[in-house]
Length: 294
Image 1 (cartoon, rainbow, N blue to C red):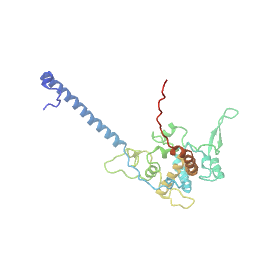
Image 2 (image 1 turned 60 degrees about the vertical axis):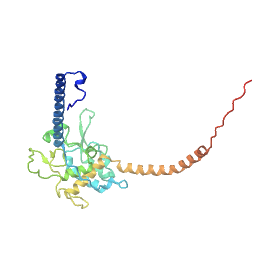
Image 3 (image 1 turned 45 degrees about the vertical axis):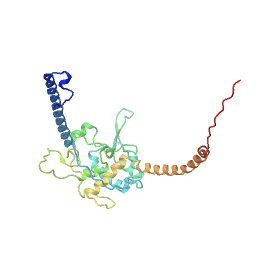
Image 4 (image 1 turned 180 degrees about the horizontal axis):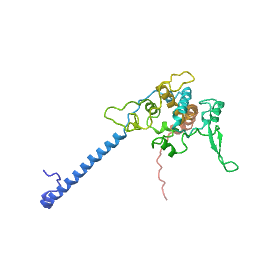
């Protein structure tokens, strides 16, 4: 049976010409089909090379519309960041003043800032000089520039953590899973030197070694210093760093809903008052008799 019913002997096209057209069309279909297979294989390989295990969902307190951040956890998370994460990762969008009444009092944050040294200037002679930190200064960077950061980390650039919660799919769930997901690679997977196995990282090979270990940091409030607890605290702190306005935004939302609810009552009454005569009126059309012309 002819695969192409348009090409019949009744159309006046010779059988030789029909066979040439059919062979050409078969070749085109084979080419397209083969290209689709190769493209699909490449797509599968590209996805499998970058796939990562989806992080499980955790019940974070601040996810509820009625709850705020756990500020005790934020304070503990800042301790973890300062003692562990700050050696490689920056927090460029957070200044010392943002930590006031969140991590500590005004005097406590000022004392922390004074412990850091910042380059300033130029002075009257045109020279740069060092000075103690102020509340308006950003948190110190671990490296002076990106090239120095890459040189110290075997070519890898540690990302800034200011917006890391928003920059990664899964948010704080991803951060917690990444920090607690280190383990030995399965059989058959060989990692080159300098890489570590973590199924939650795209490709499962990450250049950052396990940063948290049981008991490495002592909390002043006596909270358990296990890996999971420290990972939870630093994840909450980084969530706050990405959205310092989180709690104020929720408060503003509740105030707006309350005011709009109050305004709805007189608005509906005024609408009913003004539109009731219009909606209940009766319109009648009467025929107009044509006037006699003289």
